[in-house]
Length: 232
Image 1: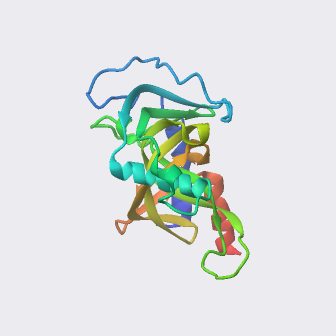
Image 2: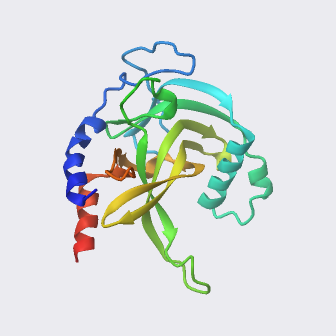
């Protein structure tokens, strides 16, 4: 699939960004939810007021694998040297799970909020995270650069207590991707993991190319920027 085809397809992106909150609403038990959902009003002070979680919610405990992923997230976030650090080993497994998140007026869904027969895709997200551009080289100074990551949000959650803070997180199935000629190609599932919701940048769509490959339709300006870089 050529770049101009995906750029044209991206013009449909406004439809995805402005999904109504109730279109894909569903809980695990299949119950109907209110058309005007309540929200997580008491946003922690260290989060912008433009971030909020949307009902329904459910208090539960993470699985042992999810707890490990949470420990990995905190280890990276706070630069803790050892995953077996006593502080990480005592991470609380109790969380409050939410199905949807609103950021600057855009509703981001999750796998938990999708109806079985839904054709809408509002849980494929692009996030930006800082990574060390010199991580492949030994004895080089750390060089943190922003990098886009793509994944399907499984759920959102509130986790309290670690370092005496409330954390608003997304649990994401990260995808392996390759960028060629400015296009983002989905190479399949990579790993599940947690990420702070402030890293979420925008929703993406996906399209199947003529060869059967899956491509992510990114933010239009970002796609155009990549295309210009490829043409230089």
